[in-house]
Image (cartoon, rainbow, N blue to C red):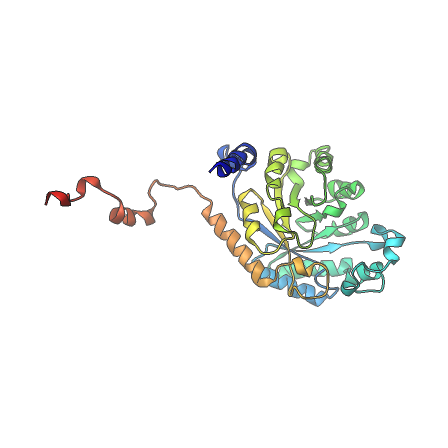
Length: 326
């Protein structure tokens, strides 16, 4: 009992005030259908046909967006990084890390083809950008958002392109990022009055896969406490196994959930093992939709479906026969 009391007291004092309940009470927060981003990333293995197949599988599973990645590798990497061997040769698609990365890159024209294909089948295209050149190239495709990966959220030259030249929403992941670095990003967008209208900040832990103890989901509560009224929306990007904690992120206020997505987790590449397959993504969308449907208040004290049960089962003391007097 003592230990339970300590846990409950901690949650009340530390976690509860930072949850979106304050927004609910003040009618500033509303649970909406969660947007699910299928992060295909480089799981297409450089094959445009496979990329389209993955987009179709993501769409059929119920995802809202199919997301890729764009790099200008010679801008992003030093000469030494570009020419050294891949750190995990079994997952490499080239003799050097640079060659490996080039093999996985799609051209601007190929990304535009994927954007068009998404329109044809009913799923939106998006991409992460890792450098200034990629940001300038991808902003020309009329997408809803571009994303900044955790690795590049301190690349302010690129952030300036996204803030000042791109017209869509900017999503930023915060894995391997200090609190001060997150504050710096938000402040950077606030300098031009665009954080509240255009910035989506993701709670994220960088790892593949991430153990549950390191998901640190209550960071969403802290982000709401710090930025709930300063940024456009808050979100969750997961690299864990399974789908249970994604629903927890939605309960804590995540408007977007992003998960890596693959056709087969045994395929060659570093991200497949931390990705959802089509069945898993479909179950995630199903569970998020069910949770959204459940997050309501009663419209009447006794719901219509309860009325018959109440009439049949509710205790009525004055109507009971006193068996002891018979």
